[in-house]
Amino acid sequence: MPIEIYIDEIGGNYVGAVKSGEKLVEYRLEKKNKTVTIGSIFKGRVEKVLTGMQAAFVNVGLDRNGYLSVDDMIMDRSELVGKVEFPSILDLKEGDEIMVQAVKDPAGSKGVRLTNHVSFAGRYVVFMPNIEFLGVSRKITDEKARNRLYDLAKSLKKDGFGLIVRTAALDAKKSDIRREVKYLIGEYAEVKKKFESISAPACLHEEGNLAFRLIRDVFGSDTEKVVVGDAEIYEKMLGYARKADRRLKGRLQFFKDGVDMFRRFGLEEEVDALLDRKVYLSSGAYIVIDKTEALTAIDVNTGAFVGEESLEETVFKTNLMAAEEIARQLRLRNISGIIVVDFIDMTEEKHRQTLLKTLEEALKKDRERCNLIGMTELGLVQITRKKRRRESASSLLKTCPYCQGMGQIHSNEYTVMKIRAALLDLFADGYENATIDLNVETADYILSKNVLKNDVEKIYVGKRVYIIPHKTYHQHFFIVKGNNDKAMQVPDKAVLLY
Image 1: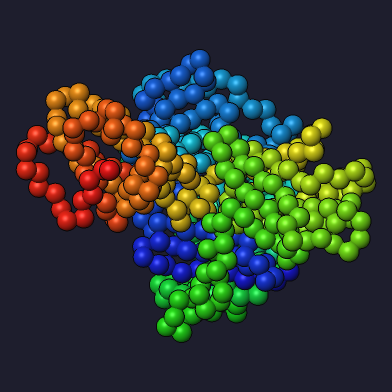
Image 2: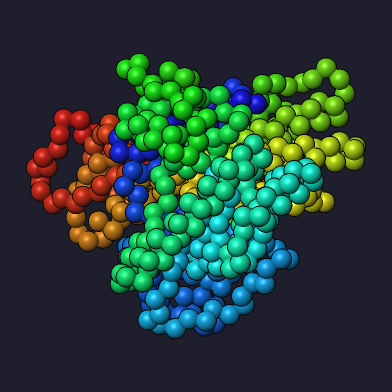
């Protein structure tokens, strides 16, 4: 399907979107002054070694120390498994100054994740200066193409470093790949020179911004257009096109219509939709996506789709449509880690196998590494997806200050229980009167349901309790105050409790 790329700078953020056919498949928002980007290289100082965990905390000049584990000493093992001997011991001591690279964004209280085997990603190849290895991306499955690219990389490789050929090299000229390898070797030489001349902690090399990475990683022969809404980014893209990829110049468009670019091209609604739990399919069926601390759970439902054949066929068709959409949503929302999908039960084994094959093929379109584990005895499909950056929603949403991310608030019944406890404490302290400032809906509930009537008649005997409703108060928020004045001053809207 034809690819369209949209890039803009809005409110100090880079915003990028990728469409495949008529559907949005990627959306990223990144701060323009982001302190660390995956791929950036630092001269770090080892602050603490955790011998029992074969890990270390490394000061790279950021707010929090980075974390280096022996398991992360190689940035991405997926292409190297079975071909490179991985280190099992972290041979470091406190005070050592080492070259490290960011491989995973900081998350919560955790610092950036690091590796000390740096690599340089170009459009066509990944250059690894410290690993003796030669390979071709696993996403290239055609054996003839793999052999051709392997031979090409072999002719470019020198002793002491490694190369992995990326999928974009399929359509590239040999001269372009050769030029890129030479450029990446030069970049490493500059980084090495900086490492030897400056003190730790320091940044030696900054990975390109979101706009650059989208062009590097997504732009290809199937890209119809690249629409840019910011003049500065557009000029830089033109410069990059002249230097690195002349095809880009002919497909680069500057958007200057004076309206929001994402709204004009119908992307705004799709971005809003990626925040919803429920995603509807064209048939009327839908999937529900729920995030937990440990994993992401996805449930498939037939919804309004009833089909025209047997129940088994209806379920089968629903599951196939859901498989395609789930693969798109994982990429669009940048959901990573463990994903468990509860497809609708099917009785025929051939349908289950076809479903798994369909899902596997759909996941291959993802730029991040996905692993389809299979289906459990309960019919749950397990997937893992490599985590490097935050989920898309984390840039568009923040935790609700009222429910703290639970998605629920206290019921009226529970709020009344807390009010009652506060009143009892107040009267036990010797107060004769009390006021309750609270949400107007909670006040209506207390007065209409007579929920505190028994307490008034038996416990608060002789006490005056005024309810003061507020439209602006959150539903489970209230303030109980004591008063011993014989003539209480209360607002006109105050209501005496029974």
